[in-house]
Image (cartoon, rainbow, N blue to C red; front, side, top):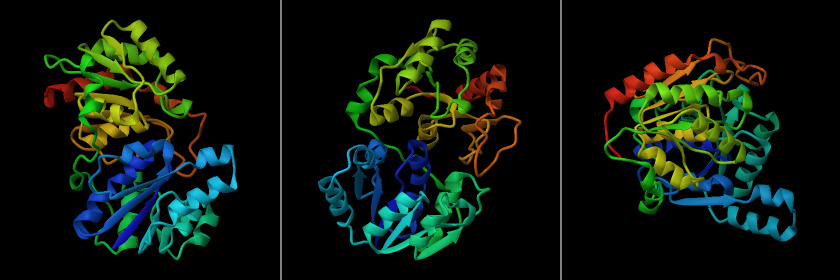
Length: 336
């Protein structure tokens, strides 16, 4: 069976969708899986044995500089699949159009889980998956329904670590890890300001944790936050700007990862690395495990459209995070 999964963005959601791959492989061991995504995020799918083909589309580039030749090139790449089933995990008009061009039977969300209602008109099959489910379970439930797999959702116990990287990616951060000490990695920002924990509080957290603390960054705004943390805590070092695969490797060799609702934080969960993820206005999207913990602010969440003025995440006490972090470091001792 030839299956195509469509999830164009963002980094974190692609990671959450990837949890479905092991379920597919268990029930359909001989299937061929293609993943269709935006070129900006394609690297997160690399080194994944359950994916046989990655189709990376330059949708942003095509939007900036539209051309018939560019459009024809993307169309030809999409039409190369000859798929039996195409599952749209994104639920937007653009992803539904991509699924339609790819060919094969198209399946996607229906009801509140569908981001744009018009996308549903392009599906031949659909499934109403409760919006209240954590995102990772919602995605795997859709995959299960579309493929006729028994069960509804991937649970924490069903998922083994699934992100991969090369030795060269790992070597990039050799100078930042020391086998004699446990290392904490902080993810300083997310894609949305209302989901960010203040850098001054991260600096206090680093001081309370003690030991080596690293801070990653992917753009100038995140670099500014990382430098603020490092300026205020003597045990903090700022990592160089890393590629997606290099970041996966750095997170995979960390002893603890702390951050908000973001792609790098979800990398820790997907790699089996102890983590604490902070949630405020957005719903908890992962299944907690003994080593992957969540701290949620006291505010209620709008599941359809989070309140961008809700900055309650900033009210989470530094001491609460530090206590959980110390517990995880003590419980899961390992060396880089």
